[in-house]
Image (cartoon, rainbow over all chains, first blue to last red):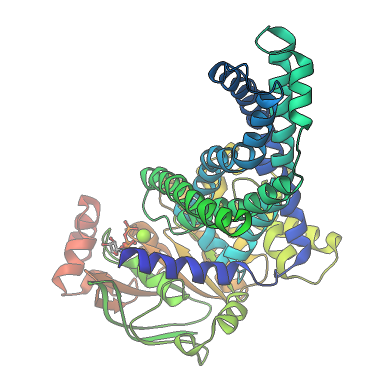
Length: 246
Length: 252
Ligand SMILES: Nc1ncnc2c1ncn2[C@@H]1O[C@H](COP(=O)(O)OP(=O)(O)OP(=O)(O)O)[C@@H](O)[C@H]1O
Ligand SMILES: [Mg+2]
């Protein structure tokens, strides 16, 4: 019952968000700020996590497939496909749900409880449109770059293993990451990530926008945002994978 | 002029306002008073349509708000300025940008004209250009209230709402803010509604007073009549402080 009510409330909020802005000038003033805050500011964490995961994937795959019958390119291939199919989209987005989701929910939640949203409404401005539309669009626009960037950095992580250890040779690794390459996987990952970007930014906005109470409730709102967007991401991951890879 | 008739408002099962009526005239400081939690903020937010009411009418010079579509409400709100209990300044914008915000959103003037208007409003509330580029977190509570007033009057509102304009201020600054609101109300013939539980400001500027007790109207009148009322709840509220008890003794 409660979930039904929340879904309806969420749908109505999105209806308010996706309308023509009162002033495009104000939208275009907010948009680059959000690109910076939600997209560019996420680069460091994407870099750090991708490089480590790329390296770890390479080491794990190699160590767990000590079989002379397996071709030498298999480690690079598995690393690449794991990055392309799941890590750089789904896992990356789960991590970003934590970072970006809590950022959005606490920012909007704070504006709600300090009556800044009421102040916007009272001027006759559509507050949902003014605050949320730039966030959702900016995050969706930035997401493909983050995903492709994460793929590239992840591959670099594996390469570093080849360079600085004798677990795998650079030649084997490079052969592996080029072997039987399926460009469609990148497309599939990007499509997934666009959906995830929408989920993260809109769900977090929803929880922030309807926060009520004090600072503690803003904290609860951002926890709810992260938990629920993560669950939705996993669910939609299953759905889209079924649609696109079956 | 704003006329409220038989307003009822509840949140889910919990009814907060019961059958409130009142007439708020232009050029006057109309005050809604009552203890903490009596429903002042909810009443004010209901009058401007931030809360949807259960029943009743709210007429802005004959235009009934509950009958309006969201689009019409938004249009009406451009004639409304509001001062919130906690100032509600945008903390990512400077003082100047806060006052510019409503202008940039709705005014068709050039940038230079808007800036002129913003500076006029800020100077009207006695702020100097030293403060213009500061952020809300960098100025005192009294200054924040002034900025909020400047933002509220930027678009020349016909209706001004102030939710506890002097909460958190020292008595002297509170008086200055009250006087400022009164001056602006009279100068521009605005219909002003002020929420307060501060008896000093009630005595100072209350042209029309509506007393709410537990969500019901318990008394109405002006600041000269308030000492002579025989409504028990009002007397309990007014004479809660020793000072006002003494005033009453001297008066009678
Ligand atoms: N959004 C809301 N949802 C549910 N209940 C609410 C909401 N807003 C206010 N209330 C309830 O309405 C009642 C009146 O609150 P209100 O904020 O109007 O009091 P107030 O007179 O403004 O008090 P104060 O002087 O402390 O500001 C309170 O019991 C409060 O719990
Ligand atoms: Mg209040």
